[in-house]
Image (cartoon, rainbow, N blue to C red; front, side, top):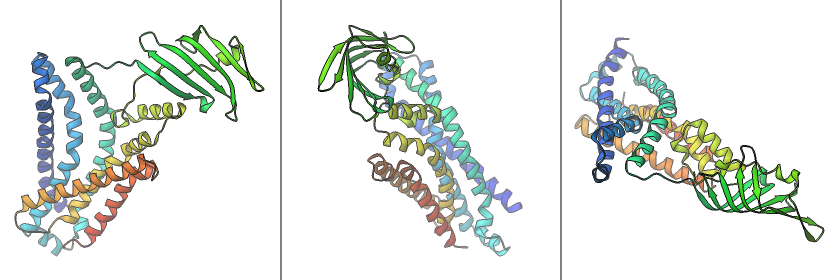
Length: 356
């Protein structure tokens, strides 16, 4: 127990110091990247400080894996350099037993990071982006043009020249209704359509129904009108990155893509990554334990090199698997979890052959 307490006493100050340092660097870098824009728009210092404060949770999220990797690698390498671990091993305590508190701490931090990311980082980062866009006069419009939406499992296809979000209206609208076997049932043409809260009210509408080999022109039937219930959010210019929204919002967005018949591989990959990425904390601690004790000289330098090298290797691997999943070569869930599983296996092998 004394060993474990001593380990945590050495580890926590370095971890917290590294976390503060890396987060501060990221906040300052973000400030410097936008400083000239703030000055040119004469943004008050209080608003700039608010933007910086809103970026702190995101900076901490970015810094957490690197900070814990550096702290564990440095502390254990320092123990080796000072022969302190020799005494620990001589007392009958293995490297795995000695570092078990760090593994438990990292596992708890993994679940904590998931909750922190989903409930704090996403909202604060979105607020930061909205505030910064407002201060720099970069507000985006939700209006859209040249829209094609596949709805109702492919039974209804909308084609509109323009969507006006202010009036929730569609201009020059064509709607294709298909039978269950995907054969053509009818085509509805409308000069415009306005959302009434549950359906689209058509203006200047006309229905062309396929009867045999010919199209019959007539008024739009009530049965066909009841099919036009796709909400305005589907037509908005609101393509989002799943990484920047909460799990709940991401699920809604993916369902909307499925409902519209749009590709979902990229969104699903990023969705599963939300669950797999926090495990990078557990992985980097495992890696640090296995990589520790490789040298007794230049402990700080070697720790930094190993820290950066392992982190870069993991992120590159994850980038490759995510690209493969987004292009459909592997399932989205595999793209998110393969790097995690692979690096856990590598960590176990490194721990097995670590110097004890």
